Length: 440
Image (cartoon, rainbow, N blue to C red; front, side):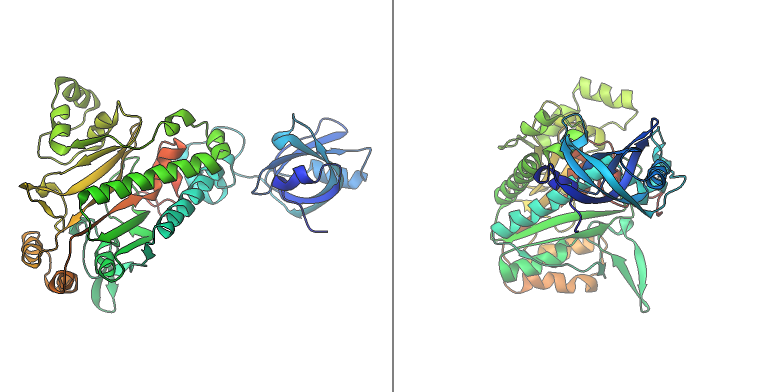
C-alpha cells in the first residue's frame, strides 16, 4: 500500500495507513512508546502499545535512535493535543535505516557545530522552515517576472571581466587564460534587454570579499532584471513591486513556517507600498546628526563622512523609524560602479537606488540606470583601470543602437533572512560559503 504523507492525515482519519519518515523524538514509559515522526511535510506523533503489537517489534521501536528512518502502519486518530493534530496508533513497524549517536541532540549546540553538520541540521525545524520560505520566495520571484513578460536569460558563471570591482573576484585558469567567477549577471543582461526589452537572470554569484558581517556570503543567489526604454523611476517602481509581491506571497503561503520561526508577522504585514524614499544627500544629513554620530562611536564603527558609501550601521540608522523598506537614491558617482549613468542635473551623482530592509537587515537591492553613451562608457572603463578589450563586447550595446536602460540586483539570502527574522544570511542558504567556511 502506498504511504500517506503527514500533511494528508486529515483525509484519512479512522483509516489504517502506512507512514514513512524519520524519528525526531522517542520516549517509552513502560508498556507504551511515543514517537514523533517527520516526513518533510510535517510531524506526527505515533503511539505503540506492547499490548497491541508483537513484543519483538515493540522492543525494536524502543531501540530506535534519533533520526532513524522507519515505516509504520496504523490507524489515524484525530487528537488536538498531538503535533499536527493527528496521531497514529501503531499496529506494525519496520526499521529502514539505523541511526546511532546522532550528533545534533535536543540541547544547545554552538553555531560552528551546527554548521559543521549542516547536512544534518537541515532536518531540524528551524532550517526546515527557513528553506521552505526560501523556496516560496524563489517561486514568487519567477512568477512575478513571468507574469510581467520578462524573459529569463541565463548569464554565464565564468566571465573574462569584472562587474562590481576587480578586488572581489575569484580567479581561475581557463585553458591558460584568466577567468573569473561571476559577480553579477548584469553585464550579459544588458545586451539581452536590447533583444527582448525586459529580461532577468536568477542564479549564483560570487564575491571574494573578506567580510565577516552577518550580511555577507562569498557565494549567494541574486535575481537581476534589466529593462530597455526606462528611467530611474521605472527601476524603483519595479523594485518596490517585486518586494511587495514577495512579502505578500510568503505571508499568504508560508505563514505556518514563519510561526515556527517565531517571526513577528505584524512587522511584515506593515511592509506595504509605497516605500519611503530618501535622496543620498538627505540620508547624509541624518547620518551627521549628533545622535547618529554617537551611535557610531558607541558601536565602534567608522564615522560617516558625506560622500562615503553607506556602511551597515548607517543603513540600520536610516532604516529605523520605517516599517517598510527604505529606498535611497542618487549616490555619489565615486562610490558606485563604472557603468552607472550620471544624474543629468548633477554629474557628481549617479541615477541609482539601494533598497534598505527594515529591522537592521540592510541593503537587499542595488540598482541603477546604465550608461548608454559610448564615449562616456569608454571613459569610465579607462578611469577604473579596467581592460578595454575585455569590455569591447559590452560597449557594442552602445555602439549599435543603445537606448536608456536600467535594472537592479536583489540578494536572495538577505531577503530570506529578513523575512524569516533570522540573524545571519548563512542560515538562509542550504550550504553557506563564507571566508571561513567551505565545509561541508
